[in-house]
Length: 120
Image (cartoon, rainbow, N blue to C red; front, side, top):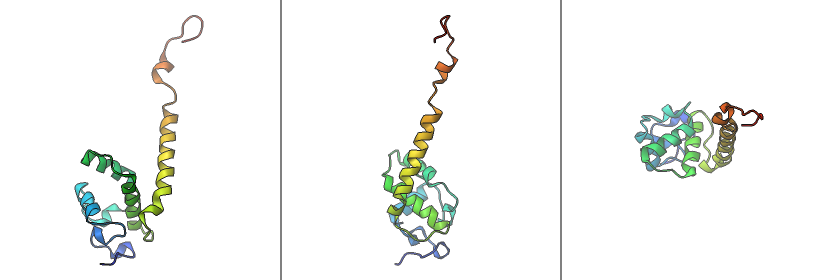
């Protein structure tokens, strides 16, 4: 069966580009009842949710597919999942950098009392 060309023609998850039976099963496992429920969702949160539910770190291409699915249901054209690989890599790098920057000062060290010489 041919894949949908736009979100308005999607009835089942498998109508979407890049989505087969296994991925449709993953959406069901996460409690997502309809393809339209993907619009507005954070694909990175979906990915982490799936990893927790399956107790397994999923392949990064699953995240790329989640990005493609969410973007498609939000009105983007049908693009192959690998189109979103550069976006995923840039976003994960930005998030890791932000996490490192937030944690750059050790809270315990910041609160440690100074000795008489002025050092910690």
